[in-house]
Image 1 (tube, rainbow, N blue to C red):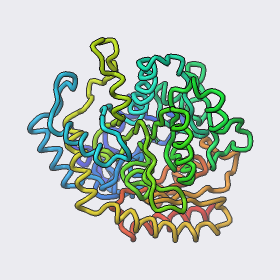
Image 2: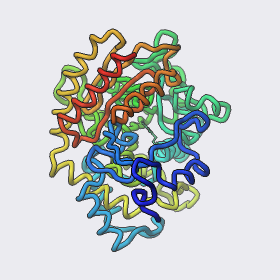
Image 3: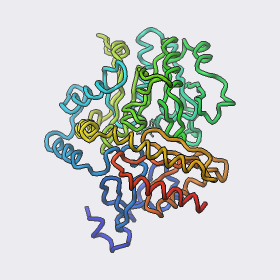
Image 4: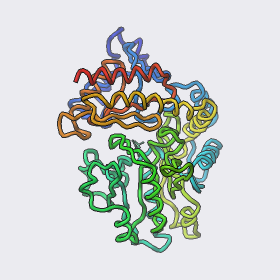
Length: 446
Ligand SMILES: Cc1ncc(COP(=O)(O)O)c(C=O)c1O
């Protein structure tokens, strides 16, 4: 491997960028029109350093995964320590200490009675596993007619087939809709289509409850839809209704988990006006910040009740799902260390401070003539800019704003006309203000 710093002249692109341009196909990227990718050779804290010596503030935690900053010494050490012992071993029939300890930690922190941890590789596969578990469990319980899933308007659960079917953002997955399993959709209090949306959950469950395998939700914040936020009351109501109808609830905390909303899990928010009350899902999906942003790892947590339906002398009742890298030891070791950092470096206290700072800056931004609305929760700040076209994910404003922020040394990747700031929790006040200043500057130039 050549060092990008020595394989190019100062201020020039490294020579391997040519290889990227010739051979790579990047995610969520229109390869015809996108500008060339920016070569990064180092990350430290919230800063990314480009091959030509520029510094870019990572204002989106590298797709919402990074919570302790890039290249954290404790995570580096944990990774090196584990690599020198065991990098990976098949997870069927074998196990290892970091896998078992991380599972116990997740169970201890998860809301409700989730006792079993099933590892997979990323958010999409965590959701896929949850949907398959819920579906297969009904077959074991003698109710194979339960083949229908219910998901929210504007949902995003990932890019594999089950997850796409549950998703409700047509711009992402519309092309594949003929191949989806059956899903009914429910409006949220913030749904863009609320007025048109036919069914609410109560009516749907009253009518078709006996056919429902599970209900999926992104608790409190629908990230990919544009950081849409709904009140805890809604989530508690979904739990109440699903319980009433004996339907399992899948909480997808892939984005919201690990402190992003201000509580460790969004399910921990009590109903509005109350001090207590946790939403206890039947299945919980986590990934993204599970390894602090270091390595791909996900987990689907299940209740004993659901797990027990798979226990049988009949081997056909096995959960036949797994990935080559399931339970990767390096990822589990880093995940464990990441959880320790939450406690030892008081991450949740910092998230609370960021929420206050974000709130003040958003309040000011709300008065800007180009700003339609603002919303914030925990370490998430979002604002909807008045669209120039139809709005939504494909609004041309997104790429324009992205470029304008990069010119100012800030990585923000708007979802269409929704600009959001979602930094690693170690961002300093000065760094956070710098990002809000950049947002104000860019809005001023629109
Ligand atoms: C709520 C939610 N679920 C699932 C996913 C899919 O995760 P991944 O991209 O790791 O497959 C995402 C990714 O953004 C997400 O926000």
